[in-house]
Image 1 (cartoon, rainbow, N blue to C red):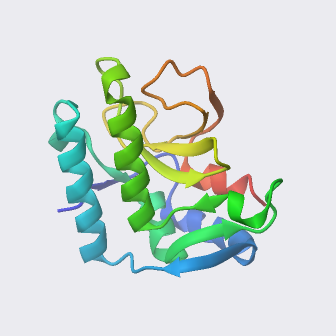
Image 2: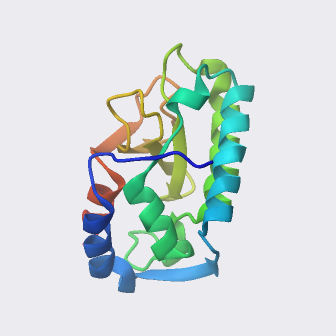
Length: 176
């Protein structure tokens, strides 16, 4: 069962923001974000966070409702046309890549995770050195927030975290 929780933004607001930016986000690898795919993502995340030593995952892991709405609307990976580098250097991830990037990042930084640090999803790549992380820990006040990680991860020292946004919707709105 997928746990979805309201964060700082609503799915309705996400849909409005999506309409403003969708034309600038090219679809690359279409994917379904149906309930079965979301359940698979959730189960994989649950298992991985448990394996890397996060405690009480069942009470804490949740997908922000606005982000679930984005996954359904985006239908897979999306490249941003107006990147300062080139079109392929900024990608918002669909379900498959969210899983693989999150699994890689969390396993890479697991030994540096401070006790009590929340769970994060890797939801985008901004270049070969930066990624976006989304807090998916409903027990943390940052639930639903997005941060840019430049050669960093929230589980590391956090010195390379920039541009915090209260929600994925706020991040997406910053693109327009």
